[in-house]
Amino acid sequence: MAGTAVLGRLTWQVGEVTGTRTETPRTRSLIVDLPHWPGHRAGQHVDIRLTAEDGYQAVRSYSIASPPEDSQVEVTVERLDDGEVSPYLVDEAQPGDQLEFRGPVGGYFVWDVSRGGPLFLVAGGSGIVPLMSMIRHRQARHSDIPLTLLYSVRAPQDVIYRAELDRLAPDGVTIAYTFTREQPEDWTGFARRIDRDLLREAAPPLNTRPLVYVCGPTPFVETAAGLLVELGYDAGRIYTERFGATGRER
Amino acid sequence: MNDHSLDGNAMAGLLGEIFPFEMTSVRALCAGCGAMEALGRESVYADAPGMVMRCLHCEAILIRAVEGGGRIWIDMRGVACLQVHGE
Ligand SMILES: Cc1cc2nc3c(=O)[nH]c(=O)nc-3n(C[C@H](O)[C@H](O)[C@H](O)COP(=O)(O)OP(=O)(O)OC[C@H]3O[C@@H](n4cnc5c(N)ncnc54)[C@H](O)[C@@H]3O)c2cc1C
Ligand SMILES: [Zn+2]
Picture 1: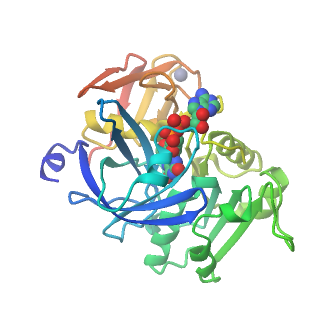
Picture 2: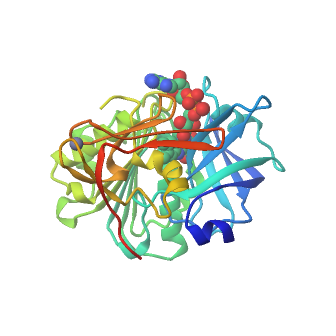
């Protein structure tokens, strides 16, 4: 860290994969040991660089899923079958492998308990990853800031961190899923893509002035953030992070 | 804004190699329309070789950057002014 700390500039550093965890059929978490990690804030990401034998390099951004309180850094990657980088990270990287990292980066899409709430987190697919860091941070601090999570996925088996989300103490925590393609048999919850009525129902009341974080594929983020502003939520309290055209529509 | 546009967060790592402070919360004055906005909120396109950041309000190009072979080229002519918070 010495070199980077003096200048305050980012450089690439090597991290070693120390563990992996399959989250869903399409996503896997990589636990990484970074000896020169300066610590991070919930919501930040890292850039990961892969170098092929012929020297060709590809750089992609991945949000940090672990909370600032953890010493190891965890990322969760969704496989896009025709993608250049994600299939490697989801299917091939193994404990002991070394990858190059740049980060942590981002200071705009971040939250910590000192920012207060109530918190309204809106996730589309793998957009849950940086929001999970926020949720884990809130738990690690035993915070009672009211938390509402609206999580849109295609089908129940696509929910990342399901077991952990189910274990969150109900006090102060409200979780709503919307399953846009396939629903469990006895499902009575939301079963469509995010729209105005769905947001109106799922969001904390306007007069609580929630702090909103929206993350997911670009069209998802644009729709959700746009509708929230139309519904009267304060645009200055809505933070967004677009993952791009990441794979399948939701 | 199209389906694969990103936002300034996606350019944070690259800018972090050049500037000694966190760049997504730095605000930029657009030379095109005069809007002042946090870089984290601007639109970023990464499909071209390198990355292009465009003004959220008028779509003018703010920053173009390409990295490769241990070098970074950065063109910031669309930014009239940066507002950086001291420590
Ligand atoms: C700040 C940030 C944080 C991110 N965090 C995460 C995260 O935590 N987890 C995660 O899984 N991903 C995350 N992403 C997305 C990630 O960076 C990669 O974009 C993703 O993994 C795909 O990379 P790839 O190399 O596998 O696919 P690529 O080879 O880049 O291809 C991307 C996919 O999009 C399609 N595509 C490419 N260009 C276009 C286009 N112009 N129009 C339509 N479709 C196109 C391709 O066909 C392919 O299916 C994040 C992105 C950003 C910007
Ligand atoms: Zn402008």
